[in-house]
Amino acid sequence: MLGWVLEHETAGGVVAAELTEVEAYLGEADPASHAFRGRTARNAVMYGPPGHAYVYFTYGMHFCVNVTCQPAGAASAVLLRAGRIVAGESLARRRRASRRAAAPVAEPPAPVPAGGPPAAGPAAAAQRAAEPPPAEPDQAAAAVPIPFRDLARGPARLCQALAIGREQNGADLFDPASPLRIRPPAGPAGPPLAISAGPRVGVTLGADTRWRFWIAGDPTVSVYRPAKRRPR
DNA sequence: AGCCAGATGTCCT
DNA sequence: GGACATCTGGCTA
Image 1 (cartoon, rainbow, N blue to C red):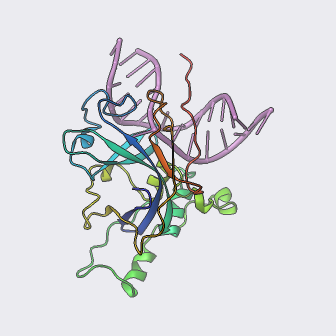
Image 2: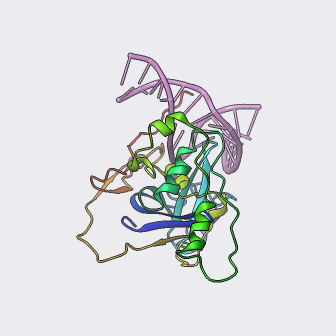
Image 3: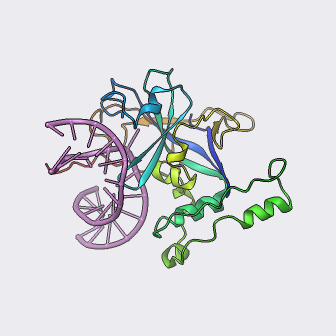
């Protein structure tokens, strides 16, 4: 999946990210997996068919997205940890900059054009005009814009840049008609990617399993942080 | 490099 | 009732 492109089309436009970092989770045999203790309401999508988005909410404020990857009944998923924005940078930037502000970026109501997909031209211009306005006056964000590399550098940042939340849980990523979808890299295949591997981030059980994979040397790969030990 | 707050869902006892 | 989470951003040193 490294080098593949995850894209989300909303009323505000399309934001796409080329995946640069992913992390594998098995099912009930993997102590770090959300399916370790069996099926629950939250992880139900993990038990469904492959190629669907398993979105979960954590730390009271963040979403993370996984791709299910084994046949229905086998709970397994790949966490999408980071990407490089390849389309919709300005919209991604607005969504990310607004994190500091209290309110999330308001997506405009989906306009239902009478006919045909929105394309270039006046219609597209009108849609752009309906995109979320710049966030609240945020002096810091305005003075120091988020570095490009940080727009989707980390699983929750990726979700925010692409506006992935509860509504996308269960989305069929391999359906081209799905607003949230994944596709192979466009254009001619280049040389094989240099891939590095290491332990997964933020997990306590199964911390020694090296199932985090990333494009070697890519600046959009997140910074490794070992699981925080908590006082008992 | 390390500490901490934030804010809520989930699943444990 | 309570521990803690597939995290981020801001701060201190």
